[in-house]
Image (tube, rainbow, N blue to C red; front, side, top):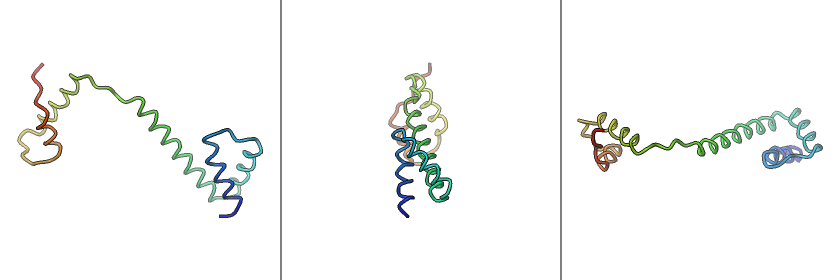
Length: 103
């Protein structure tokens, strides 16, 4: 990795944390135009950044289940696992939760 590639990789990372100065943006654009390896790195970093941003926003939008909905899901699991005598972690979990009463 030469000096220009090191500088381009640093600028590629920095652009997700701060606004690059005009000169930095021009240097990076020219280098990415000429260097396929750094273009690939920039593309990979862009995908990674977008994925992490999506995951972070997804965490904020987690669905909150009401207690009655949770009980309905547990009841469905019990129905699907009736008669299954295998000792699996799912069955252990279901055994530890009493079957909900009919509503």
